[in-house]
Length: 79
Image (cartoon, rainbow, N blue to C red; front, top):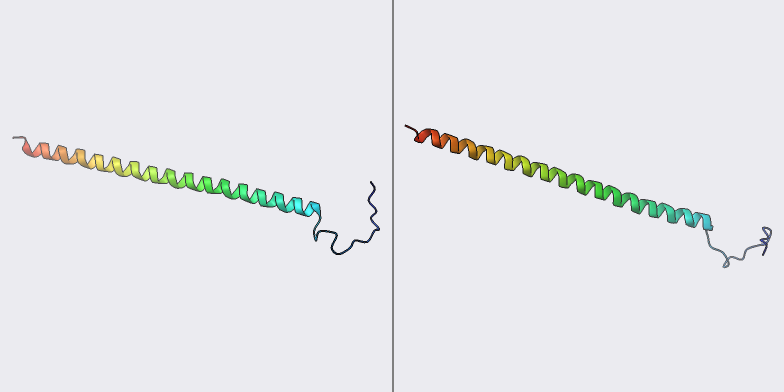
């Protein structure tokens, strides 16, 4: 099976783009999907880590305030 490059193509017989272009488009689309998914996961992880850090800080601050209030309350009751 030989390919004759001089043969004329009929308008309805061929795609408006080559297989290489289609493969490049598919690879580009796949790369875009993978890239978006990766960046989305990184963003979700970062937001989750920030929320966890804020929650730990808030809990630590509340615990420290509670300890200080208890110490202050005990010092008032001592004779």
